[in-house]
Image (tube, rainbow, N blue to C red):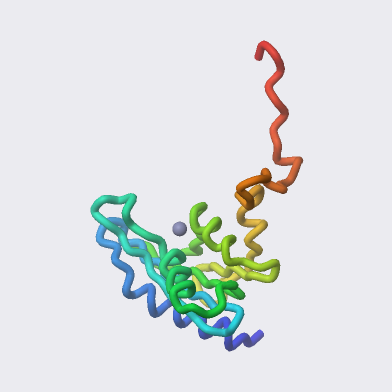
Length: 154
Ligand SMILES: [Zn+2]
């Protein structure tokens, strides 16, 4: 099935991935967003010698989208990863799932896979069940995911 919009996002993610700053992991990630107004934004991972100061590709793409002043709703995001042995399916990390959720709609598509043919769409609520949604209410997560409380004396 041809999907020129997805092809364009894949090409953008693949291009920006080449610019990743990854002297420590050699794991290059590129992310490309199409906002609901059709505009596209890209980001790559940027590592730092002080490891926690690095940032993910998705973070950079989201920052560019927000900084643009246009739509902040993510219609699609494509994430590509390439390690020392070659391309791999690169799912967003837990923190980036929460970042994507911040700008997601019920129709947001999160695409990742090892190559264009292997890209698959995912729903953010499936990638991040029980997400942090509110400063005043708990998650509306799946009750089946809740563990039974420990029995007294256990
Ligand atoms: Zn991340």
